[in-house]
Image (cartoon, rainbow, N blue to C red; front, side, top):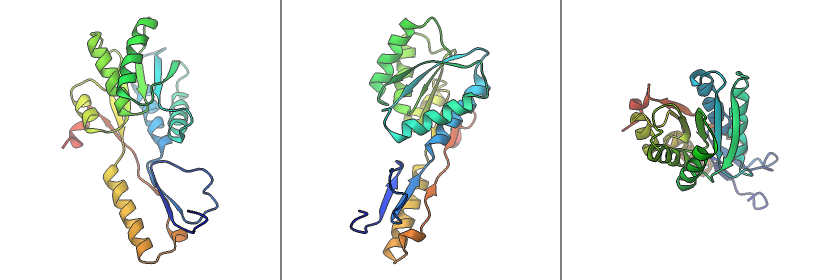
Length: 209
């Protein structure tokens, strides 16, 4: 695209090596902020000397890197919270479920499972439910704000998610396409960052259709 002089609009995933290309435009939500929101929630909600497990996507994915950094830096506000271990569940529901089943056998106790997306978190919920451990003693956190995750929060299963505002992202993209179509130089179009929206039981009714 750079060689051909074609504008490149990237949704949700940052592309490295584009800093020197004026035709590159990013639209999405800062993934660091999603991890930071999870960490801040945990700092407020967890008991003293809490222990958590971290379920992630692929380690070479920039979303993974940014969300993990945000989480760790937010958790630094409390030196008594420990990340027991990290598991690559490929952000999938099935692996989130099976890994939780293994962790329930491997660890005497833990206070939260933090996931990098809602699919994995929903798998965690299913595993806890099957083990009769879905009693609120283990917090389950996700990212995305999927319909199923919002309902899970409403049901008292998941504790929170960081909702990506897909509608606002799509509207921003449509606006960029319209500007380019009308002759605006891509170099004059700024990147668009749509803030995550933190959803818990306190405000989930605002987001469920």
